[in-house]
Length: 117
Length: 113
Image (tube, rainbow over all chains, first blue to last red; front, top):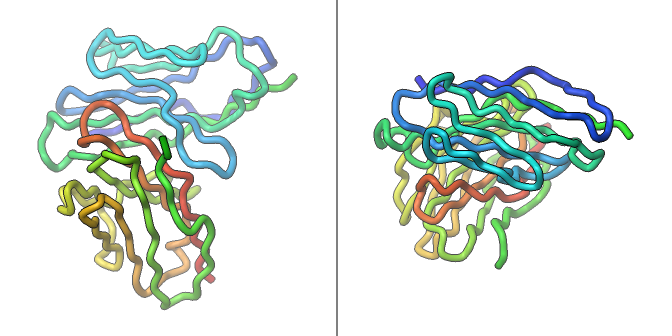
């Protein structure tokens, strides 16, 4: 079945450090891939997405490239800020593998990022 | 435009009771999905509705049910509440359940005592 695996956290960085959060996936079809962010006490916010191989999603300085050959969608940011502290979720949506996956996101377990001043 | 609105934000119920949660999607969005978030199990898919029809369902017992109205608003109901049902329940809407991504509400925090 479909699944998403993220690196375990927490990840603790100093401000302006480089961020990488690894995400790999297993899917039977041709999934769309997403990164969501969750701030304390809030719901999920879509950070970026990619819908086909080699697509690069980007937003607010974050980037991720859909790598079909390595089934990966790693999140990167060149210089993190304290305000980036949150939980980050990698997710996939696999409509192409049949109606049983319609409207369904499969999430990784989440990675907590703590950025210290 | 207004985002996805979930009500209430917080709820405390007693074991054995039932509860109804509400979700108003973004205007024009016809797909509404529900998720349960717990520290132990993470984010798990409950069900998805599109044009008042349930199209997909996750692996939850029959105590969890939902519906969608003609204006795309959705409700989920949990009957005979158990302590393990304590969770953040999130609703997400999408234009047509396509590859464009889903917009989430802030969730309803349900505590069962």
